[in-house]
Length: 419
Image 1 (tube, rainbow, N blue to C red):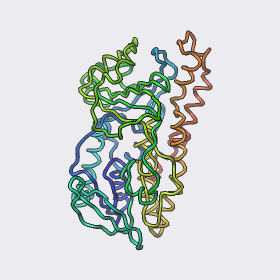
Image 2 (cartoon, helix red, strand yellow; image 1 turned 90 degrees about the horizontal axis):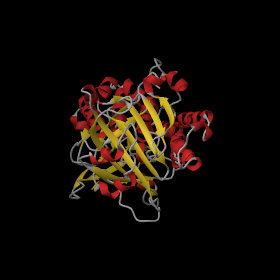
Image 3 (tube, one colour; image 1 turned 180 degrees about the horizontal axis):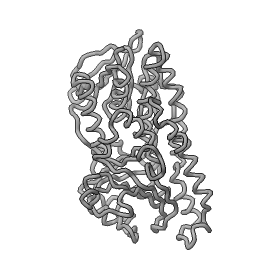
Image 4 (cartoon, one colour; image 1 turned 120 degrees about the vertical axis):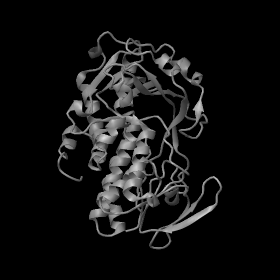
C-alpha cells in the first residue's frame, strides 16, 4: 500500500514509524527544505511514551530528556495549591518525559531515515493542491520559497499531518478560516540555571489571565548539577485585538511582558531572573480550531494538529498526535480496505480529541489556579479554607480520564503488546 504522509513534524514522523512497524513503507513529504531542531520544550505524557516505547525509543528519549517527577500548581504569590507525582513516581508503567522539541523532532527524523530509507523522507515538498476527484488521491507539490513545481504524487492513502494551517484540511473545509485566538499570548524560552524543587519538577503558577509554566528538559544538564529550564509566560488580552500569526521562529523583546512578572520572586525560584537569563524569547498566540465532524474522506484523513489543534493545556498537543499515529497504523493493519481503515481510525480518535479541545478551552486541570484566584485573590493562610482536597483531586482525575491517561486504564496495557 502506497501511503503518503503530508508533513514531517512529530505526528507525521511517529505515524511513519508506527506504519513501518506494521509492515508498511510510507513516504513523508515535508515542506521545509531541511531538518532543523527548532523550538523549546515539550512534555510527553505516559500514554504517548507508551507508543514511543513500543517503537523502541524509550531509552533514546530518556538519554536526552527528563523523566518528570511531579506536577505542581501555585497561585501568583508562589503558594502551593496542588502537587501530584507524575510518570514513574505516580506508579505509571511509563515515564512522563520533558524534552526539547527540536531534540525530539531530530530523534524521530533520524529514526525515520534509518528505518524507512532517506528516499522515504522527502524535503522541499510543499502541498499546493490535493485532487480527490479519482479513486486515488493525487498530491501536487511545489518548492515553497520559489513556487517551482515538484512532482505530483498519486497514492493509495494520503494522511494530512501538516499542522494547524493544514492544506489537506483546507481542501475539505475551505471556508473554515484562520485559527481561533482566545486572547492569550505565550512567550516561550529556555534558561540555563540551578535546579529548582526536585530538579525534575514541572509547575504552573498564576491564574487564567496571567500564568507562568516551567520545567527542566535536559538530562545532560541535570547530570552535571545544572538545569536547562523551559518556561512559558502567558498574559491574556482582548481577543478582538489583532494578533500576529503563530510562528515558532518569531523572536521578541522580553520587555513586552517582563514588567507583568517583575514581582514574581518566590522562595524557591526567581522568575524575573529566569526571564532575564534567556538568550532569546519567542512569541506565540494561543490558538485552536473548532472540532470538525469528519477527518476521513475516502482514502484521505487527518492527524495531529491538522485534525484537532488544541490549546497547549495539560501537555496534550504532541501526545495526542502520537496516539493518532498508533491508532492509524492499527486501523490500516487490521481493517480491510483503505477507506474503511481510515473510517475506523476516525471512529477511535475523533471524539476523544474533540473532548480534549473543549476541556482545554475551559483550562483543563489548570482551572484549579483560577478557582483559587477567584476565591482568595490576596492569597491564603490555609488552602483548605479556599478549596477542598476532594475538589482538587476531582479536577485532576477528570482531566486524566478525558485525555486518556488514567493510570489504572493505561497500566492495563503494560505487557499487552500493541494497543
